[in-house]
Image (cartoon, rainbow, N blue to C red; front, side, top):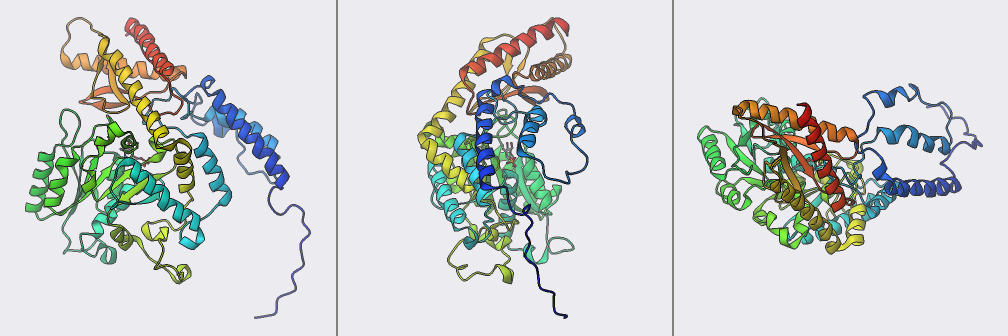
Length: 499
Ligand code: PLP
């Protein structure tokens, strides 16, 4: 190797970060901006009113060669970005599962960005590793889960559930980690069981893990959209007779379409009889267990092998933060741990290194925002807000029950109402009646959403187009719920005249 030339010191003033003075100035300005955003959020349309491609058309195709001033960038927030936002924090956001961030959560997220820790090893972020253990143990206690459940944070429930199924597969002892699954005549079909109402993330997880869609069997539900345990038991027995390996059941506590709750206490003995892993998808509803009188929704989960809950759904924590509780962290570790020389540390036998428990190496310091949310609101404060959402959903339900123009299409165990408009008309045959109502309800939903005053979403239940009103936003009050009820009735009146 030839000797390198001496390196001259640089005097380029344009290197380095934004100055501390500038950071402080624009940091304050942006916090003010966010405070004003929340103060006036109700004046903004919930659903973005732009058309596909509108934002891109206003942005340059190529990056700026020279840096731009923050004033200009912030001005574009108002001009370009805000109109292209659908405002999930708007109190009249009722679509999908309504969720929202909160002040302490935002401040936590800000600090996480500032620290920029990659918590792959304990030593790369002792704070993240240890705070995660503490915050998740607090959450476990608040949800009434037993001490055998140990928690780990991932980004989303989709990823949490995929890791749970991977750990379950590791427990099958078929050397999938070492040998893989393809080209193996010695490996029968491995099967996972879910209800027909389970979230699509489970199927995606099964696909990702190479189990194939054939590796997922969907079990019928009862009239209240809950998994039928007898059908589950029969399916497992049939699969065993066919030589398959049933290894995992995923029960849902709070399904996406209706928030129905699978009968976990009846599913547990089936899993135990067949030595199968029981994973509970409580991504949405798990937070409701913080409310003492709703804790029963997790009954039976003390015998589950794993459970996912998303604080980014109903615990006022900014996206993303999903928690997987697992009774067999050793299996999760066996499925994923791979430590190259450059990640070996002297303390690795004594600590928990996050990267041993999943596909990611670097992990965000997500625990900080959850810890701040829990400390700021306290268990009672969090429970009070969730309880209020359930009360508002019951109130909306009572208006539907009292009206002859609307009907409920599913029970309301928590804060999601499934309903449709069903104004009476002359005699009709049933299929025409349902088709007319599908068109009517879809039209009402789009009309309400187009006003920008509220946002609803839909699903199909028993082949009927069903409107969903989900209450989960920290800013939603009774006034907002009354307003959306009035809006729905107003649109129904307009549509009934035209359709
Ligand atoms: N499970 C259930 C029951 C859900 O309702 C959802 C999303 O709404 C998910 C899983 C997926 O959540 P995530 O976006 O965190 O992957």
